[in-house]
Length: 72
Image (cartoon, rainbow, N blue to C red; front, side, top):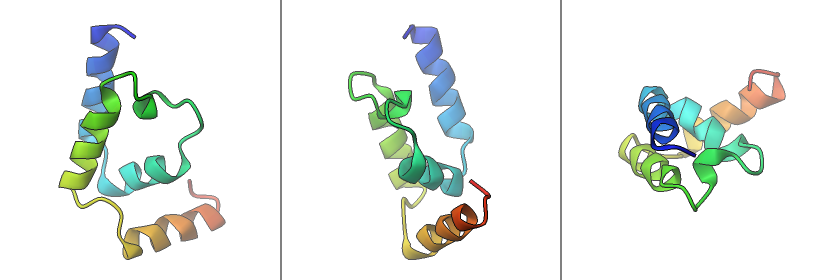
């Protein structure tokens, strides 16, 4: 992945809401670039996710409900 592609991912992460991040955290497919520990994206994502509050019971229930009703 190029430096430009990494920056594009970081910009996308910066635009994500806490709920969008929670959905990605919970439901990202295997091999998703953000969770590739050989890239700097995981640390960037995790730091921002923690900064916006991370996972909590309410968000977990919300994304679980949305998933059960086809809104992922």
